[in-house]
Amino acid sequence: MKYLDIFEKEEGVRAFFTTKYGAVEGTPGGTIFNNEPLFEEMGAANAFKVWPRQVHGTNIEVIKSSDLQRLKEINPEGIVLPNTDGIMTDAKGVLLTSVHADCLPVYFYDAKNGVIGLVHAGWRGTVGGIVPQAIRRMIAVLGAGRDHIKIYIGPGISKCCCEVGPEVASQFLLEWGSSFSEPAANESGEEKYMLDMKTAV
Image 1 (cartoon, rainbow, N blue to C red):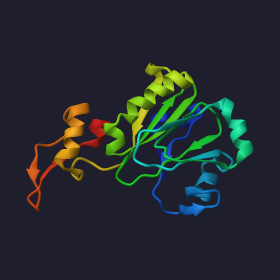
Image 2: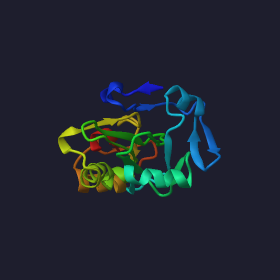
Image 3: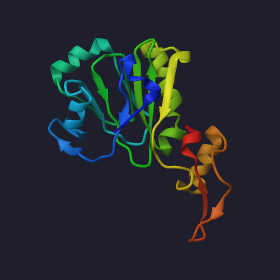
Image 4: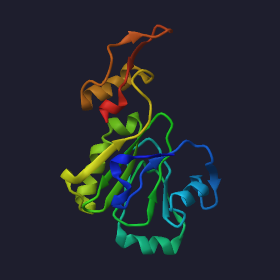
């Protein structure tokens, strides 16, 4: 487990990432991955857990503090959100989760206004603007302050390994400008680019 020091535990929020070791897939309630010993260690065993079913899209769901009691009445353990790659809340006692391999987890926290967010940013979500969309929604829907939002990009694929073809490169170039190496032929003779996902985000 790795704490994200940028969010300072004394401010009342804990942000972290782990490996999949100890996680259980397909646990009761439809959660994607679960790790009860870890949640116990983190003091989050009783937290309302939010499990997005990620589809490499740009859909962001918001859980307002005013919605929390109603959601707990449906299932006190938590909620599974279909077709969702970003989640945010202003409610206390909520654990936002996300599952990643190469894609980037992007954490958001506005300590002044008590708003948190977590986004799954694959190349499709990134080129679709999921990160700036998350910022705009935090501000518009939950009252976050643009100057108060801290953002952390978690572990994911690096430029040295993220090989994409011209069809992907052209989408990034159109939307976000250059985040690539110069094109080169791979071992099969195909034209490929190396995408710097973190710079794009």
